Image (cartoon, rainbow, N blue to C red; front, side, top):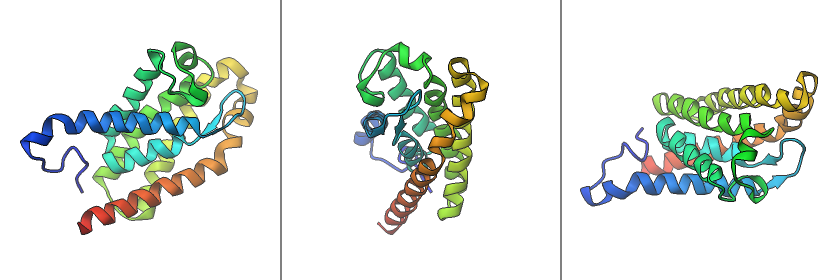
Length: 184
């Protein structure tokens, strides 16, 4: 299974394909952050779904580049984060570890899926492992703001059911699009 970057391309397309994919992926991350349920200190967004959709479809390296571009856009102040925020403050605030987790999880899950493509189970398992990375990095950072006793109740528990559904959605779309790509 080839990621969009590995697929054979004509020389005319080669020059713009990767940058266009990175911009498109960062746009998906930004848009998915605007679909939110405001919680404190971490809002519930669709960014987990977007992260794993990018990982499943683009592979680890390209998905990580897409998330890195999204984080760079946030760092320079573009309103790409949840609720239209941007700048360095949200990146070093309570959600900073989760945002970094998106980057690491996109790479790890994307590489795992790229190297061992398969059906739903083979796609969901790496995404669940990536979610564990997001929660780990998010909680390690969040503890600075909430204390260790509050990390699980405010940084993990409210998100478990929704994130499981987001992973199932990302995996289903990934598997369906891979089937369509193979049939074409």
